[in-house]
Amino acid sequence: MMTGAPPSPLTTRSGAPIRLRVTIRGAVQGVGFRPFVHRLAAELGLTGWVNNSPQGVGVEVEGARANVEEFLLRLEGEKPPHSSIQSLEAAWLDAVGFGSFEIRTSCGDGDKTALLLPDLAICADCERDIFDPANRRFRHPFTHCTHCGPRFSDVTSQNGSRGSESLGDQERDQTMKGKRHTTEEKIRALREADGGKPIREVCQERNISEATYHRWRQQFGLMGVDEAKRLKELERENSELKKMLAESLLKNRVLEAVCEKKL
Image (tube, rainbow, N blue to C red; front, side, top):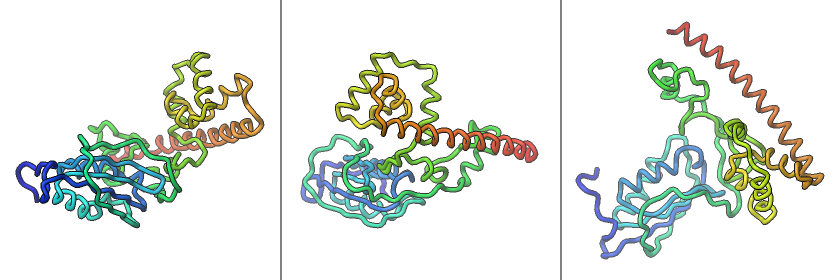
């Protein structure tokens, strides 16, 4: 166990910092792996970055060799409980002088091989929260954390897109109901997509769903046959998800009744 101030990342046994690049494959997304890497790097006084990729998780850290070696040893031994590492590829490189450690935007390049976890049953901590009258999550039916809750059914990218809306899309549109986009804003969004910008990125920047984007194209007479089919598909899926949400709300009422009896 380390005591006192952590060693400076600017010194190593050879008198210079060293950099380590790690590619981790397996079930390492949606389980709190990146925050775990960030905490571990901060504890050891390392700089660099971590991000998700279609293959899993990518990491680069640099600092004192002893600290970097300890980071590599602890990476697998202290990983989040629901994660599973199938392979870990490490390469030693020259330091580049990272100024801090950051969680970077996910990368979308390469084959999509990262494993998707199934939905996880509620954990003991979250269950305790929803039955605690003093907790802000009291009786909230959708309480979950990095150790439980929806995974596969809530995924929209691996960094992978299932090509369908998730409950997150519905919640985003619900949040934006009070906001009206101007004609100029809509045209700007459509031009960005026509110019090669990914549709999902255009939607995320404006906090809209993919279905809304296609409706905008329909509004300006830009929708082709394939897009019309895609919009119908999204609206059908959206209708099914709304039905699921209504059923969840009904279950919530049942849960409330059970809570009242327990209290």
